[in-house]
Length: 303
Image (cartoon, rainbow, N blue to C red; front, side, top):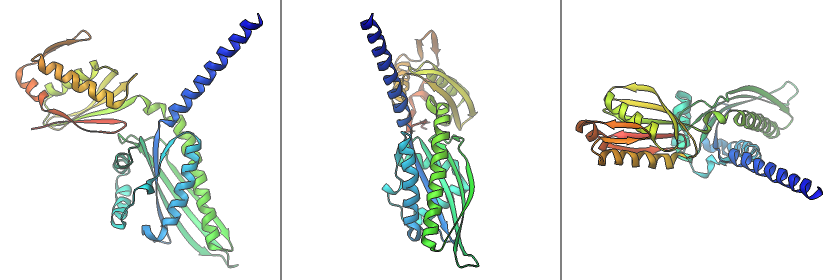
C-alpha cells in the first residue's frame, strides 16, 4: 500500500513538473523587442541620449527575461543617426507598420515601441524636477495589436538633476516592464496558434478560391478563413494552426501546390476535390513564397 501511494505521488509530481516546464517553455518561445524613443528637453538626437536608451531598455528587458520571455536587445544592431530619426518619424506615423518592420529586423514575434518625453525644470527651492510623459504600443509580426497600450505621466524631484533623471528612468522601466509582462502573459493565447497568410499580385477570384482550398487542406491547418479580397491585388486569410509551426506549414503548402500542378489540376485530398483548368493551374505555377515572419507568410503571384 505504501509503495502504491508512493508511486502515485511520484507520478503526480512528475506530471506537475512536466506541466510547469511546458508552461515555462511556452512563454519563453515568445520573442519580443522593446524599442524606446527618448526625447529630453526637445532633443531627440540618438547620440545625445544613448545612455538613457540603454538604461531604460536594460531595466525593461530584465523584467521581461524574469517572466520567461525571449528578449532581443535593440542596441545589438547599431543605428546611424539618420536612420534613427527616420524610424522615429515612421513610428509616429504608422506604429503598426513600424512594429512589423522591427519584428523582421530583430526576428521577433512582438515589437513594442515606447515614446518617452523628459522635461527638466527647477523648483523655487533649486531642486531639479523631471516630468516624464510615457506612451507605449505594440504589434506582432503580422501587424496585429497585442492590446497592451500604455499612457502614463510621472514626476521625480531631487537636488541633483542626474539623480532625478535616473530615478525617473527606473520608474519608467518598472512601470513598462511590469505592465508588459502581466498583460502579454494574459494576451499571448490570442496569437499563439493564429497566423496571417497573404497572397499578392494579379489575383482573380478563381485563384483566390483555389489558394484558399489549398490552405484549408494543408497539413497543420485547422481552419483558413478568408477575410480580405481585392481583385488584381490581394487576398488575406486568418489561419488557425495546430501541431505545426510557420516554416513547416510553408513547406506543406508548397508541397501541396506541386502535387496539384503535377496532377494537371485534378487532385483529391481529405475528401476535397480539385478540378481546375489550364489557365488557373498556369497561375498556380507562378505563385511563390516571398517572405515570412513568425506570424505571417507572404505569397506572391508573379507576372
